[in-house]
Image (cartoon, rainbow, N blue to C red; front, side, top):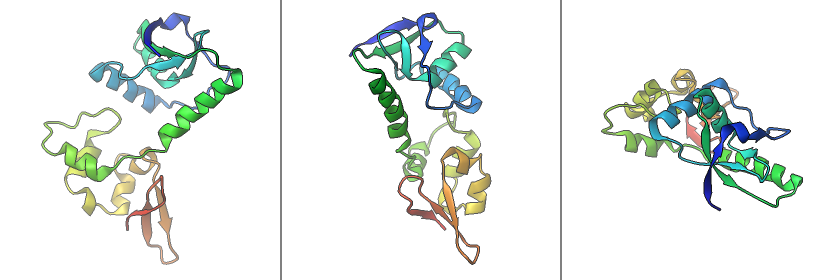
Length: 172
């Protein structure tokens, strides 16, 4: 597959879009594109229907862009197109952020302007994330919501932070 430039005006949304894109996500996508450019293409079919990348397309529309980079897939049945849409979203969501690695990478950065994150959260992360308690994490930049974290509370009221992917204990 080759990446091609597609006129945004020629694109169509699928009859059913399987992922919701909240305003905050679109804002962060715009921020990322402005900072780094378009780093991944959207996926369209032979009729210019967007199969993957609707959030990015929404960001481009908000920024009043006229072209977007796209992969074009051809020859898929309607069922295969929807399976691609569902799989693309689900497979992406199976990953999760490794904050110990992010913390190490951020050491020495001159600023914390990283799209997708609030700089106050990244400052907290680099200033002793390991030492933060679960209540502090719960109120740090909507941490729990952003990372899809779950807290398990035992009968004594003690909280344990669980990994969103595997359910393993991250912090107590």
